[in-house]
Length: 156
View 1 (cartoon, rainbow, N blue to C red):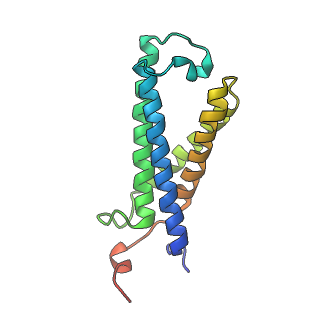
View 2 (view 1 turned 60 degrees about the vertical axis):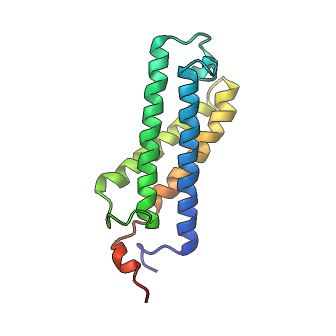
View 3 (view 1 turned 90 degrees about the horizontal axis):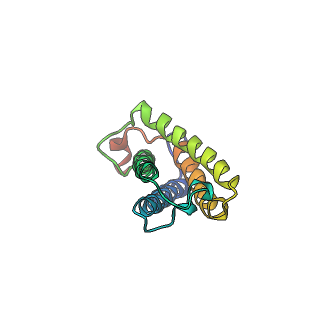
């Protein structure tokens, strides 16, 4: 089996990891929007150090939501190239692999920050979520790139 050919089990694992990652990113986006709109309390973020949300913190939460959406998009796109879901592009652009690894590294650092938090919601709740996200991003980012998808679809 060459580097560009993954077993069906591996492809299913990559696809599952991509779906879990996107779902968790959506969950985190909802949390950020909930805090920004004051539906959720601000003290579940920022290490629990704030009891009242300011306009700057609301903007920061909305920016965080936008960044999380961008991360979800990149991870989903990278997953598509590993699992043949996107047949329009046969080889991903070089920035895609680098971007998915940058996101993966960020999620690893984010996990460390959450686990180190004195806020129990961040430590145990968000720490667990970002740890799973980190694992899923590792799986997606390390998946072999499927090249020449047109040939792979032809029955042998």
